[in-house]
Amino acid sequence: MTGSRVLALGHYQPSRVLTNDDLARLVETDDAWIRSRVGIRTRHIAAPDETVDAMAAEAAGKALATSGLDPQDIDLVLVATCTATDRSPNAAARVAARLGLDAPATMDINVVCSGFTHALATADHAIRAGSAKNALVIGAEKFTDVVDWSDRTTCVLVGDGAGAAVVTASEDPEPGIGPVLWGSVPQMGGAVRIEGEPARFAQEGQTVYRWATTQLPAIARRVCERSGILPEDLAGVVLHQANLRIIEPVAERIGAVNAVVAKDVVDSGNTSAASVPLALSKLVERREVPSGSPVLLFAFGGNLSYAGQVIRCP
Image (cartoon, rainbow, N blue to C red; front, top):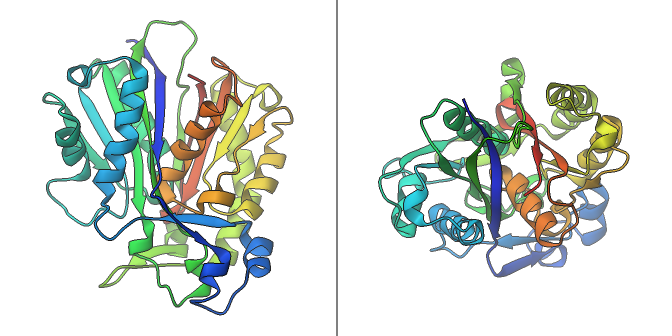
């Protein structure tokens, strides 16, 4: 069995930017209220005809171009999303068609906000088992399609976008993608919901906040233990970009005192499954984390599911 590593990253965000002042014209809110509660300044909003698979393909195309691989080298495409509207063809198949890939396996994975880290682990497992060699792993969401724009507790949170990673087989004895730790709290799964017809996003904000800030730091430290990494040796921490008031205390309680902590939520809002690869791609693009250094990826959210792993920065 071989290991795997992240070879390259890419991201995409729509051109339209929605500010807090723009939102104040839609609902009873203001910039100070939003920043004090969630830390968000702006978010990107997809155009009506800008689909989940279109954004996913943009991000994946950038990652593929950076990787140096040819399209025909990709034999697995995984798209983590909870907002794709069509059941078939799935988003992964449409991404493969857009990029001109040659006969890859194509699967969508819906674990809501922790979808990308679940998908990354799935790609790692497939490569270790010998059923794939090069994978595109993508998180893409059009979350603004499922938000109630009259509900100020949720509409201030969300944004659209995509992030992607090219994952490849590696014979390096030091794993490029460490063991995943994943799980859920099924009894509390209703705390984050996308339900109804039409589907609408709703959550029990205080329940999620208490759970995230009290339970997740210990789980994240166990992720580090599985990879043989001390939290203080991490160069980067990329948590699901749900809310700055969750990211900051959780990162502090993990004990990653020397790490760069991703705070892309400030400019992008909560992009669900896209948030981890989007934030990671930006850190790498800005060269804020050295190549080869350990980075904790840890996501949580809908279903009260969570998944994390330590990777080596590409």
